[in-house]
Each structure stands twice: as C-alpha cells, then as structure tokens.
Image (cartoon, rainbow, N blue to C red):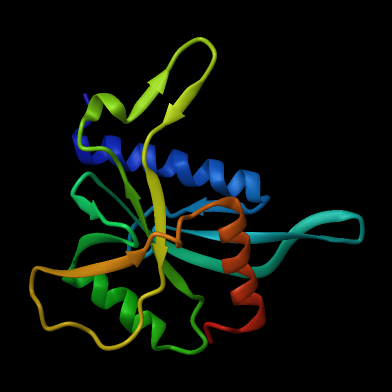
Length: 170
C-alpha cells in the first residue's frame, strides 16, 4: 500500500494534469526532483502542426491536509529549504519562472476522492504563488499566505503563461 505522502502526490498530479489538459498546455513531470517538479509548456501551431512554443512555466507541487483558510487567504507552512529554492530562483532574471502550487485537500482522507458510476470528483483545490524576495534564515518552515483568488484553474494557468510570454516575471 502507498504511503499517505505518495497518495497525496498522486492526487495532486492528477489534479494539475486535468487543469493543464483543459488549458491546452503540455505537462511534463520531472523524473528526479531537484527543486522543480515539472513544467507547463504552451503549444502553438507552426506550419500546420502543433509544437511547443518555447514558453514554459516551472512548478513545485505540494499536497497537504495541513493548511488553513480564511475569507481571503490560504495559509500553509512551507519547508524553509523549498521556500529558499523558489525565492533564489526568482532572483535570476533569465530563469524560467517557477511557481509554488499547493493542493489543499480535506483532512478526512475518505473525502479526497468521491466516485460512483456517473462521476469521479477529486476534492480540494490548488492555489499558486510566485515567491520572490529574500531567503529566510528559518530552519524549519516559512508561513506563506496565498490569496484565495490565486486558484489554479485552466484560465489562471493560461494567464500565468501569458505573464511568462510578456516577460512580466523576468
């Protein structure tokens, strides 16, 4: 039987795979994790065929039941090393931007996946954050606050790719 962290990882990958598919983006998941879990790549049409455009958005994917939500924000304690990796990468102008994606699931594991003959529902929601600024001196974690408006949806993902294309994050 899979460990709970591996189950959470599996569910989070399924969630973003569905979002990327509906957005029409190519999703690649890294074989080895060196601070980046994968990329979303824009597809364009050149000479009557579909090819990757060269515009890409990297991501670090976290799945957790340990989060809080109020009217406007989602609160999550991110490992300090992961926070620093994302912040330091954001300080390099020419680097492919890398966002944090938090898949916030219900605490009750029986509510993670609801299914019957007519439908299958993956419970929870993904939120994204682009971290920048200075690294932390904390050794354990950094409390991050993600605006609830930053839900990862097909539309928001396409808007993020547009930010990459216009150089807003460079």
